[in-house]
Image 1 (cartoon, rainbow, N blue to C red):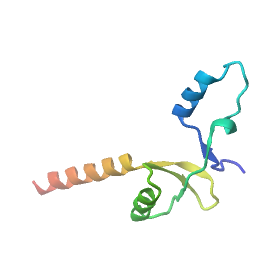
Image 2: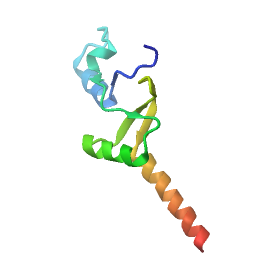
Image 3: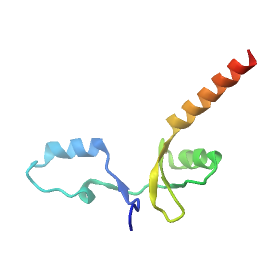
Length: 95
């Protein structure tokens, strides 16, 4: 199961638990990680990405291929930044 997406480890959880746990104790990632959230297929349309983000109330979604292999993340911030740059480019073109 190479590169299968199984969960997330948030920095906040790591920091919160490092205060409560003796740092010499061997802690495995799976003890702190949260199970995999909803994912989005790499071939999904942008409207589907935004709808899933709204439905799941998240700002990021893991992107997977057709075999559910993890490829990366897409965020609302990156979508909005791209949209903003397209609007600026269009406005410059119209001037």
